Amino acid sequence: MRVGETLIQTLWVGSVWTVGYLVAPVLFEHLDSRAMAGRVAGELFTLVAWLSIVCGGLLFAGVVRDGIQNKGPRLRGALIIAMTALLGASEWLVRPLMEAARLPDGTPGDGFAMLHGVSAVLYLLGSLTGVWLVAVGVDRQDRGRRIEGVSGSGR
Image: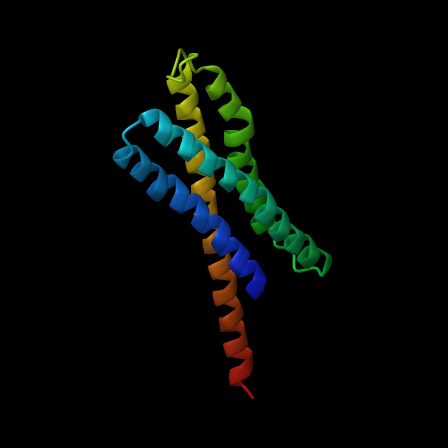
């Protein structure tokens, strides 16, 4: 994996984990209004979803480039697509339904909790896919170093 791809992947996976598991819980813990915490968290999740489109697209372009060069990183490509799709589905399929399930005063109405749960599961699966994506990259780099070390030792 090239340095630029490593930086993009770090930005993407890091932002997913930071917003979902550090920032959002802190908002709900420290803001006086749960509605305000939800609105701010929702805006941050929207930013993460857009970042997913950009980073996922750039990383997938690298996978396509490597595939054309017959390096064939199929698992990496599948993980990038899966992570982008899971985070995108949470934002653009489930979130509008969640908003529709709110009462006129902004409080959660019927079905909101179930939809929130679906969104949370999709986000969790996207987050875990990100960990897998990082692990695949680390494994590829380790294998490359071992191969270089073996071929370089006989000189």
